Length: 453
Image 1 (cartoon, one colour):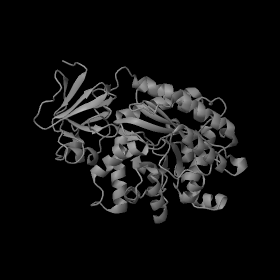
Image 2 (image 1 turned 90 degrees about the horizontal axis):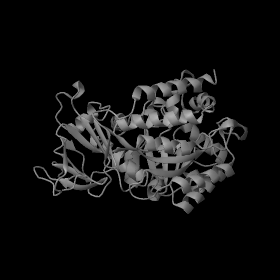
Image 3 (image 1 turned 45 degrees about the vertical axis):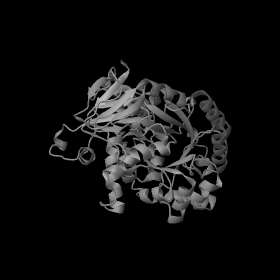
Image 4 (image 1 turned 180 degrees about the vertical axis):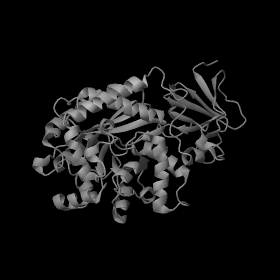
């Protein structure tokens, strides 16, 4: 008898690869999926504890590939409402310049908790704000992620091109390039774990073409190659960004990406909206990943990512909720639904199914982050799972459980497992006082905004 094994038995529905029968559920042992059970069968594993999943839709843990955790502190900020990207950033940069370590810690915990409750088990964050006093921002995030128990890819973002050099950010938010590179190397050394099942990985993420220099982009590519870590940035989010690249670099966004040594499978891009056919072909041939952020792209009216063309060309495509000041929530199952609907506007309802949207949030997102150990329910994969019930009014009368979960607009998971451990039980996080977390977070938000009022 092996009491460490758990049989998640007879799910209402389970998201597995086409042709795979896992109607009897799956067995988890020591943090790994060790067996898929065919319909009507018993597991080979003897003595496994049984969790009755007959009321649950079982998904691989969802994977979020782009976020800005600190932005949960400036949701629905009046000065940034009804703006497009550049004006939105100019409105918020002075507020964000007042960020402090304690604020970032509670913002990170709240964002990860919100993601976890939505079925997300792995999240990438793009943190690029390092004003005075925030030099150890990524260390703060590592500790917060450990407290919540979610897998993270924390990107050491950066801004080096302030207003004085023709960029958008205020000078107080940018850093010297030597400082950026030295800290990037330290963080890789101290925290990056490339092994299967790792809980923390580090990537390098100069913020965008309009906030960093060409030299920093090139240096980041060299350091990433040296340490075998990934690269991340915003690219082709808006036409304003394209115009900026043409004006300042004399080239379009993908030409710029290639010129700084980023056009390769080590790179993933946030948004990736405004690419022409030739650029999509080049990105796909190079294996560059793209994170689609549907809610943010609608909120800022940036455009619609060309997901199907990117995938057909060879680019992995995943999903991200983006920052909570341009969404304004951190709910990944809701983002999956929005991705399905927004992509139907581009391609038509017959070409985008709920399975496409699930693929982007699971296998696609895992590929975007360069991970082969998550994003799928299969033997040998990490036991990261999201279980949802269809016991609300919105689901009554539905017939296909996997489709109903998205079409009905699921908002919160009933159970979530990370590395074989239940993190969400009956829709709650054991030992987490959500009221106290929200109180601390609201106080931090008021303090941050109050610094500029």
